[in-house]
Image 1 (cartoon, rainbow, N blue to C red):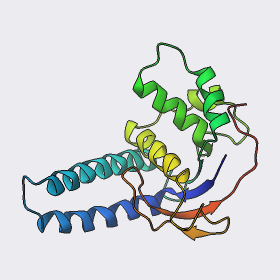
Image 2: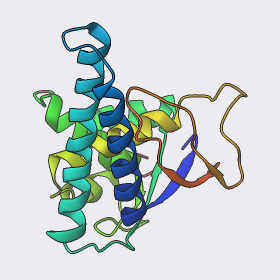
Image 3: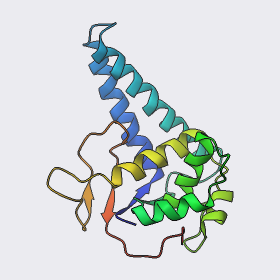
Image 4: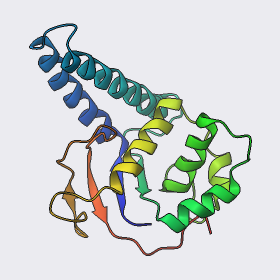
Length: 180
């Protein structure tokens, strides 16, 4: 993994709530029908979808607010190894699940030592959760303005079209990949 970050489910839901409130306020100040208004509405829909997925995992899957999830950005080699496991006829949604499985270091439904097939089989999750995992894992692979993310505890403060920009601990990782 290039970078890993640990999230607490309840904190991520609260962060999404804060971002949605700020976005709603911004939308109220925009002119309907403009490109900026439409982009903000699209971002609001995406964040609401992520939140629905996280709330479902917390409540319906019984993970609870204290559930910790560790996600990682895949290296090019890990992505190539993941591709070996994906069936040739897999559609976009199935590929997202394989990516989520490969990017999940640990979660209530995934053991640290699970291989990618076991992690994939454990992904009986809400689609909004899988989309959130994909966005967070992708964001972890994007260098910040001051270079790669810190190898010590930090809070993500940048903005990204695919990121939930949630708080968490960011660390470098040289652990074995589940794709190997």
